[in-house]
Length: 259
Image 1 (cartoon, rainbow, N blue to C red):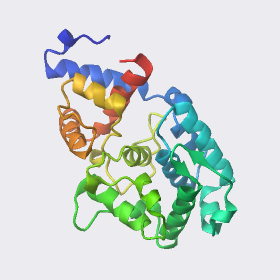
Image 2: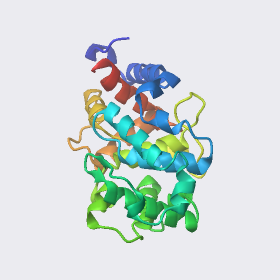
Image 3: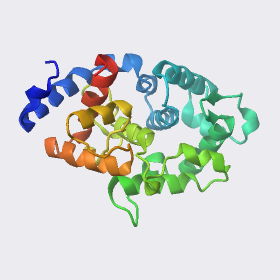
Image 4: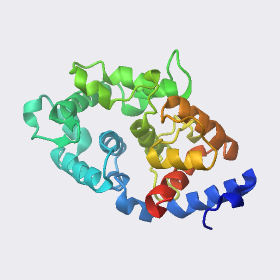
């Protein structure tokens, strides 16, 4: 079914179209060109979530470049993310690493921050409900404040998005989708059970934002947290239990069909 504005004279036609596209793109073949494919090589929960978070945090720019940098990160961690982090002490243990603005200083911060989290619980705990803020807004805020407890340079804070400053938190929302949504279709991993898929927000990017506006699902011009709230309000009307499945439709149309 090809897009034509006239085909979406009513909401049902639009829902049917997006459901079709979500099914079309949420298949194991999706992983061939997505950094999530790197995470699927791990079997242990801690290795999955650590590799997932670090790779998600560098996921901007060309997808081939992201995958290459992700492979370099896994090599640095000797393909044993949790063991490496728990043994990690100092930046002198690291080779030079650069992916766009994320460098060795930022990697050192992430490794020490994650080590602190695992010494006091685990990564899933760090995304627990916030005392003052509700929903995913609060969960991401809770994680951010937790990992920033370790000593760090100010520059590294930009890599941990802040919803309190109206960031759409694209990469963290993407990571959460990976960890929470069911693995039944062979793409997302679904190892976290303390967060319900109905809570998830899509990783809002240039593709999903443009197509959401094209379909009349989003009016706000900026790709920020307020836009995300507007978009998710509409997507939850389409599927209240799993609204983030539409990420595959909105993103897939842009990446694979130049939509």
